[in-house]
Image (tube, rainbow, N blue to C red; front, side, top):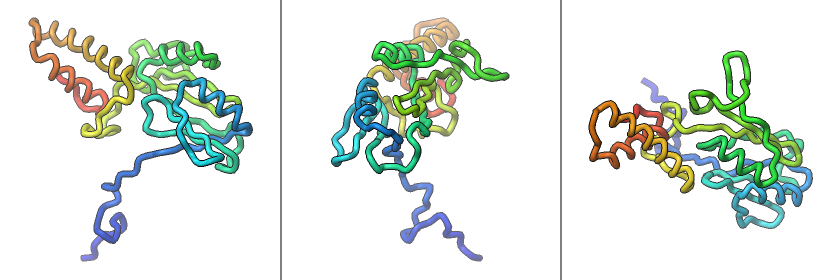
Length: 208
C-alpha cells in the first residue's frame, strides 16, 4: 500500500504541525509620511525597521502593519483588514478622542446591517469601521468568546492589561450567576474564573 506523503517534509513532519505565525500585513499607501502620522495617532507601537520601511504594531497584537515605497504593487486604499476588540464602544470612543473618524456601530442582522450594538453582545456580530488617509479600511469587530477550534487552549493568552481586565469583568459577572445557581458562595472562584477565561478564548464549554 502506498504511503501518503503529500503533507510531510523530508524529516517526516506533518505540515499541520509546523507553526506559522502571521507576522506582517503590508498596507498600500501613497504618502508614507502621512500614513506614519495617522497610524501613530492610533497609539500603535512604532517598530525599528530597515530604512524605507515603516512598521506599526497595534496594542496587544502579534501581527504588525508595514508600509513603504515599493513594498507592494497594490493600489493605495485597496486594503481591508480586521481589528479585534473586546469592547467595541470603548475602542471606538478612544479612536474618536484621538481624532479618527469612525463610522457608527452596527451589528449583523438577518436582513443586513442594523444600527447599534448587538443586543445580546454576541461575539463576531458588532462592528464599526474607519479608513486611513488613503482609504484603506479597518473593520473593528467585537469578540469576547471565540468559536470552537479557533484558538488552542494551550495558547490562551491576553495581549494587554485592558483585555485581561475585560475578561475578568466578564468572568466576575458569569461567576455571580453561577453562585446564584448553586445558592452559596463559591470559595474556589479563582479556579472558576481561570476555567471561564480559558473557555472564552478557546471556544470550549464554560464551567457550570
